Image 1 (cartoon, helix red, strand yellow):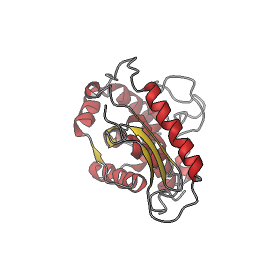
Image 2: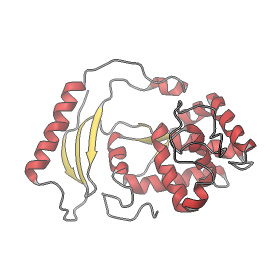
Image 3: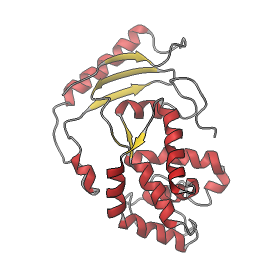
Length: 243
């Protein structure tokens, strides 16, 4: 397993950041954690979407990004994989940005469901999905941010995530096709929500948006940088999510 280790500054703008001795300690923790767990091979790769079964289980990386642009990393931080459910908080931010809090909360709640992420259920009191981090809520959010044609909505998501990650991102079309071919449970969830008026009549378009979001290729480093970008990019300081 090849590994990329070390601390890096994402931009040349002077930043407060951690003091040198603290940065060294953080990197030591990252390195030791990587060395401790790099040979663990328990479990299996995901196969509920057939294309995901092709993932290399040997890939392992750790990356930490600070909001002022410092990166601490070890291992396979540059290996791409599809973002899958980690797309959900970013799509939720986009919905809040585009639709506002009041309108967004007409379509999804913010309470725990107490059940599996892919449960075919809605809140009995409101008919909404319980929250945007389960599949039902994520599909409702996808319905809010989809566009016509459907490719435009997927590209808008990619463009927003590119700003957050600081590099061009792309879709894995093989994974997206695999999701579409096997996504009957998500279709059931979507049509249940359509029955209760949570999403509009463009059910297939909402599913296309959701499958596209899940199929975006990212690296461990991308995810660290994106997670440090609730509002501004740690790479360039630009405003990303205006919420």
